[in-house]
Image (tube, rainbow, N blue to C red; front, side):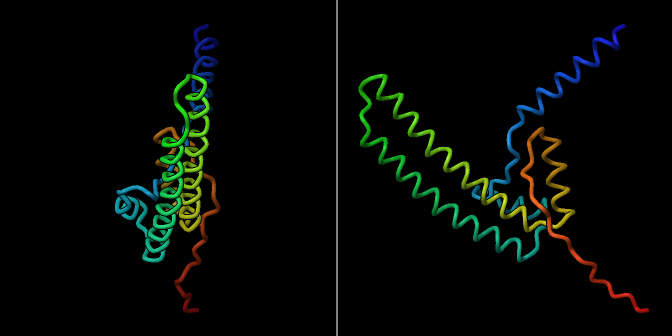
Length: 147
């Protein structure tokens, strides 16, 4: 009896949690990139790629942040209607920053091999986050068969 009630309830709860999961980001533009290097055991090429992505992302977000500052300085803010318009414009800029960060994460993830990407997926699922889908690199076996 309880089984017929509890199982659908648990399924509904799990479904609603998975539907509301946040994106699982790496935060390439963040300050703790050395943690990424250690957790995913990144090689020199991946580290170089991450640093280049980080530099590009900093430039891109700086431009957007300057636009946000200009918006705050120049947009009228006297009435509730003006503040509503301001907030809508701000949300657009905010979304641009999120999309740029996600694009950098996706580019870095595409340089991961299968084991690194599996580790990423494992951590995302553990944190109840929605992973960014990419095709990991297939690393060919470098061991030469003597026969």
